[in-house]
Length: 168
Image (cartoon, rainbow, N blue to C red; front, side):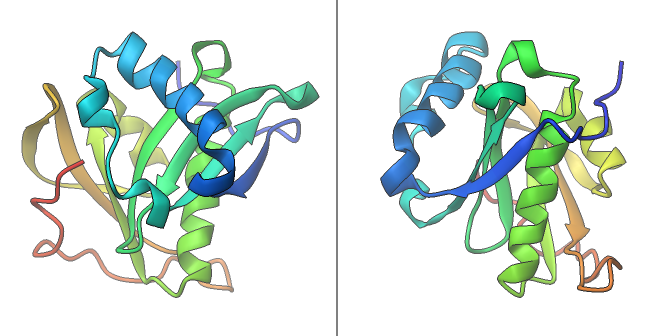
């Protein structure tokens, strides 16, 4: 089953580490640490305070997911609570972060997709590049896409030479 298009009942807002840390970590802890078994020492990093974060809410205002955009254009930490998967929450978070990149003037964004999520990101305009690699014990693949210009067209060009070896 594929991720549904975002519904009108999903809202995503920009969040900050300083103000929204508890909600951001609640989702990430449930998905990455508890569900996927990623050590907390690998999940927490010094980049969070300098990133733009997103929080997604389902109908009724229930917390549903999160993600972040690092200053260099790397999207990461996309996490959706199990009960909200395949409802459009993940898509809404990624679209929000791509729009944030556009507002920052970035021509492109990239991410390290878990191997079983490559098709999901492909449907959102990301192109896989390079081989699979291990990150926190999980196979990943680098993916990239242009940010969206004001006219709705994709900006930027895929470039193989950048960001290939960045860590999570």
